[in-house]
Length: 114
Length: 110
Image (cartoon, rainbow over all chains, first blue to last red; front, side, top):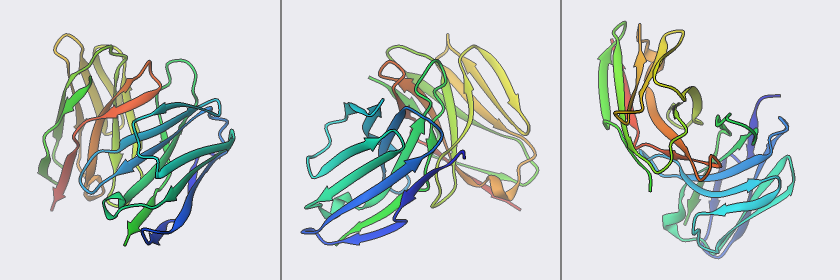
């Protein structure tokens, strides 16, 4: 199994809602990532988990809360989002060792905040 | 910090050869990666150059010159399905994260 899966594919939420995005990989990768991507822009790193511990938070607002329940799962909890948070949210994973920097991306969740 | 610059858009005809350039400024350099992303899709890994020179993988080749802080992706025998965005990227933060270039949208025309 060489894929990263993400659910849901699409999500529409109001500014007062709480929702969660889910990411799963079964490749035994030990590093997992959340990115935010706006149209016509490169992915912007949000969080990195390494061996199930949060290792990088790129100064992301607290309305985004990541969680790594186990080595295969990564969640992103959303609360009190703003319309400008509407974007494609991508999850990725990497083996996490040595000089293999290749990241495997999931198909993303298209989020619309109304 | 890290910055990677690419042309915003390139247009070419089917069957042609196209080169997408990437110039970078980084503190600490491990190598240069390339990713392809179709509209609405996930970025997919194409290549990684750690050393100077040309790496070939089928119709795609990638080149790196560390002394010039420059690399490029070469696409040969262009096909319509190659229409996509292409991003160069460098490992950063001790290799724990990727910093992406500005991205190049490639349009292949008949």
